[in-house]
Length: 104
Image (cartoon, rainbow, N blue to C red; front, top):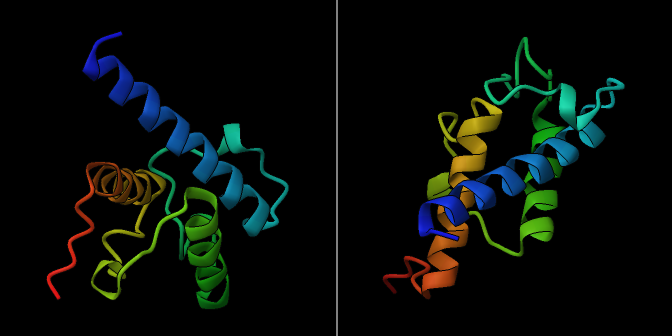
């Protein structure tokens, strides 16, 4: 399997796991398969509020075994399912390459 095929497979796995977390948190009776990649997480989309946003953050950290830095807590990262999956993918890549971005 080529590196790009592995990357696409990994991205699909991240998306599915994230959609599963979102379907459980949103409590709207949605299946992971019914949540679109460009689904808005807050506001008119899945309608998560700030307390569910914190729960989502903790669930992501537990599910994917990573830490989301304060600098990553920007609305553009949390705007859609796809943007959040991209952030998770970036964090997983950093972790796997051994570069967690710690400049301290």
